[in-house]
Image (cartoon, rainbow over all chains, first blue to last red; front, side, top):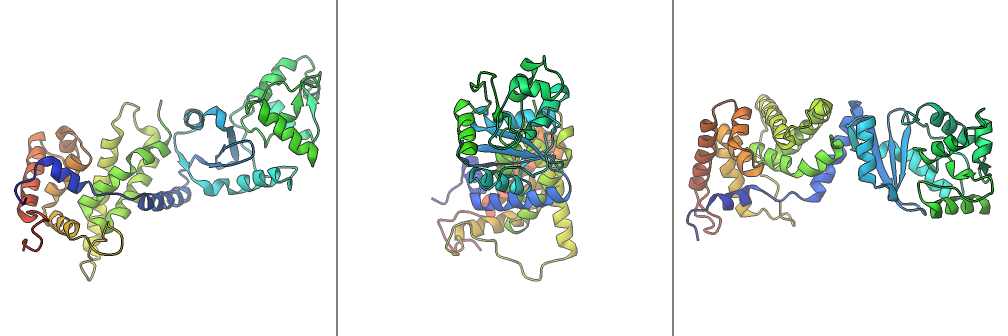
Length: 205
Length: 163
């Protein structure tokens, strides 16, 4: 059995097993070094919540994206790579504050989010609407028409709908508090079930 | 479209670590891995979308390993450390220790050629570019390295037989 090995045998021997623990440790080391060197243009993590798994992503400026599971997190990250930078790393440290505030929100211990936001994914009218959404208080709702009036463009009801539908920071920027004029739900990126869950959560508090 | 850098780490992290282990031994491989991915992350936005990501990473790892070797020569370790046993329970796996020792005895070019060919699976043309020689020289380095390994590491089954 000690005769010549063929190349494949040698390849197997040289391909030493790399255990997952070693790679996790190296990944954490990379997160720290990259953060120190200001190389992480987008840091992200995922957290569990009552409305499913949420992707949280932040630039050095602040929280830039919250995505529901239904949005396909891989696709969301690819889009972030395209729109912001491909220097994207799973680096939960930067998201600690946002994750804590979201946990508190779902535990009904928080009504207003304080975490810094980066609205750079939105432009123009959409961004204007999204900037004003946090003015709708916890547990309250407004119609798309109310929002159009609030931003000084009463005819732009449909555009307000688009601005809510393309909100890059759902939950934290409360587009779920905007309903149709007749009181029905309208749409929601996280699905109507999630919208109802958020409204019920706030109504019960 | 270029994938997020995290996907590069997930897809190629293990292979780059194996390459670093063969080139440097288990002890210094972690440092080379870390330096490689940090440098790669810095340069990633400028990498052409059509580039072979693995060959690019191995090229960076090659340079970082040379840096680590140079640093080690300046500050030699007082004791020749025994590589950590990959198998659990702290019992060194005789087979693996013997292999590492044999790999470490190889001339560096042969060791590198073996790592890039048999661990990373690069083409000889890519290896030649990394090592800075002809394709034929790269092929020869890999095959000489393999021959030398077989000579000095005739097999783990006949335990204790190798000198």
